Length: 136
Image (tube, rainbow, N blue to C red; front, side, top):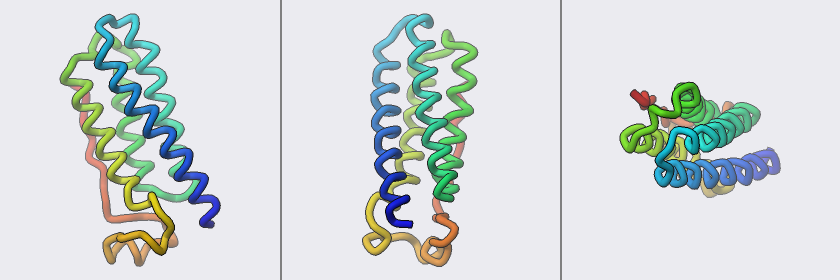
């Protein structure tokens, strides 16, 4: 199972890096036309991370990615709604997602999870929950 988690960590780090770059790119754009493709890319990375987390039963990460994906899906339908405030909210959701991933960065033996999480390692859950940030 450690090999699978290693692959997940690698993929998750790639998605997280792409999400961070994407939000920074979104901050630089001013037009709704330019924002559309960036939002689509952000959505795909959130969706990919959600699926990867589900595959390894890391449901806290899956839930955070789902919340980010839902918020981005709203913006995909309305790229003109992108404002500094919505970007800030998206970055806050991204931070929550990155925080949910943090305990899974290293090998299981190196992990410092809360006692409740240690007892649920088989289910790949931790006690961290992700709160949603609506974009409006």
